[in-house]
Image 1 (cartoon, rainbow, N blue to C red):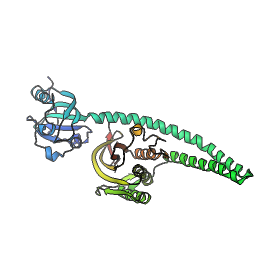
Image 2: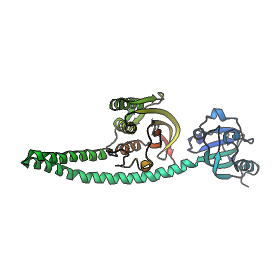
Image 3: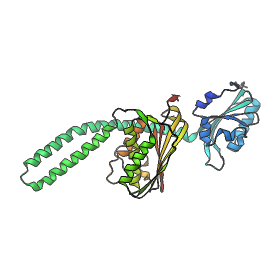
Length: 358
């Protein structure tokens, strides 16, 4: 039988920095403390849960109640996988849970929870990041290789046009010149995401207002609604890159609406967020929500890849560039889509990271 782990009696500040959710219980299984990650996971504030029975939060998942009793009676640690919890009619949570006996004043048990979906999501994000990095390097190399011959093709077409005796044949040389210009612009856009950032304080709502005015001018029948948290502090970033990234996302939504529908621009503050394996005290959550037809399942997994487009005539670069710019700001971009609702979620750090997380 192992002796219970001793913790400082009053100071749990170190637990506030953990990315996993932590709850401390007394001998009666009453909640005495929960960290910010637990508040985020269970979508409830500490004020509502302190001095309340654990069962009020989790219900009684099979196996967990007995494990808590054993931990108290015998100082046994416990690790449970794929526990399902129910809370206030919300969607069930699928969690891994570790129970550790401790001694800290009236604290007897430390419970640590990890969202199974979060673990799978982290692994998927790491795999996608590697694939996307390889794709970006491939596209960048191809763009460099293509740019040089394009100049020669365009110059030759111009010389040929001067030599043609029949002006009616100029139509064909103009096709060559215009297509060469289009490809040149495409290559420039592919390479533009690699320029150095110019970081400065950035008010995200000023950028959103600029994007909104541009979209309303281009798509006058689209209703672009604001839902801002105006208390958000400034972010630090490259204003032009962030403007271009958000404009690409919102324009993509407007194009999906085919010029008629509603887009919501929503901002919120998130606390204790992990982005790119770094833990931040405060982050921005920006959501672009439209009521369009949704993203076809056939391209949903590849939609951030270069040259992938769900729209006829689309270049397939807008979302690729948006993702590149967001990632350069140590942020993330995700999408959830179904018919009638597509939501792009961008998260950007608003503070310096605490530490590297493993």
